[in-house]
Image 1 (cartoon, rainbow, N blue to C red):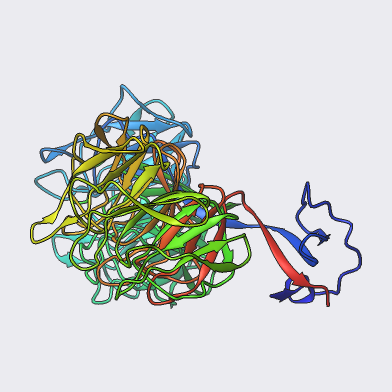
Image 2: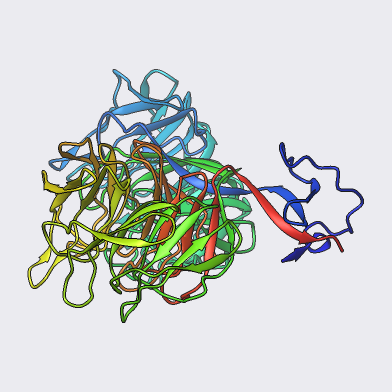
Length: 600
């Protein structure tokens, strides 16, 4: 429990806050629980999915000083090894193709400027490096007589307008370059070189205040700062990578994202790092991990466009810093630590049952602050499924051993054995109620993953259409006629998400991070997925589903797998799991957090 002074810096002066309408910064007395509580806003950073480019491509360029709502993308390599000069404009919602393309089609080129006054330079035409420089006036490209002094591709570039830009590093016919050139609107002039020559790097800033980072060096972590005269080596990236994206306004405010990182498998990086002028700090990942894309905008409001993983994509993501995000906070611990168990109910009225290994029958009830032991399952088991509410739940399948088809109904006091599943299995989820439910997926004895789906009418199970992707250790939520199947192990682990309409499964947009043994809460159109195993490694990743896309949210306080979940997307519960056993966390998806405090 935090003290108010720890959170705010002073002692409580009044507690006039209204619990029916809590306002950030206010304290109130919860007379029901005899506790003081403090309300605060929760902010975070996140990528949101935008509309894709009309022409999917990689190794393209952008108006680096463009904004999240006004940017330009041009050039690049389209599917089929097609080199394009296509130019598209972004208005904050969608991309519009210009009838006017670059005069010299090329990829791995540089860009600078803003949406209405951009610059394109260098690149690779398919046969040779280019020195060509083109100026965009808001509607068309004009080839400038001023050309780069050195033909190159894969270099860093930035600039606030089409009359003042910088191009540095790159790949030249003579090898990796450290050369640095400045554009004055008419011609290029060579200035002081980078300290470390490299290609496929990224950058942020203007022609007089630049941060250059990443690129093909032994570590791929190098960062250098330009003050208008010379380059200075500064703190390295945390995750070394090349072919990454960047955004920012100066050498003290930048964002680095995506890229190819040889330390990752696969190497396409989701990582995002923020630069404060001194160090890089890891923050929330991209939704679509990829390299060879291009960035624009600022450290707090950026755009990442195109790239590949390994297929060429037109994906667009928008970065927003300091937005209201949900957050996890600590709840009461389970009395019996466990993993591979099941859950049902809401955040303030939940039921947890089974678990292991070895299998246990323990059942506990949660009232929003503490767990209480209640009557046990009739059959002790783990890696089972569960659904329903605190007073009317269903437990199904699991490992006794052997693999079980057993089903039990909870009436709020006791468990009663009822009709078994048609197919015995483990590691399966479901959705619905004790009289109308659906369960899906899981693992069969000796044969691996299954997509078997069964529907329950309160007395009997009926087999229906299978999942499109057979898997176990997946998560699920929803109702008998509107359910969601999330991630899981095929193997390998998958990002697949499927939506159930009561008759068949349809593949929808994938989760951002593939994992097994995760938890879920919510409905088919408003869900939360949390925790899990990325094989290897336990994570606290949390993603919210709006019916169309998954968005990364603030992570759990304790990374873990084999968890159980309950509740809704704005008010979920996660409990147990490995390695924590008894830990419970409550999710506030409103961007607000209520803390129980002492008033000193």
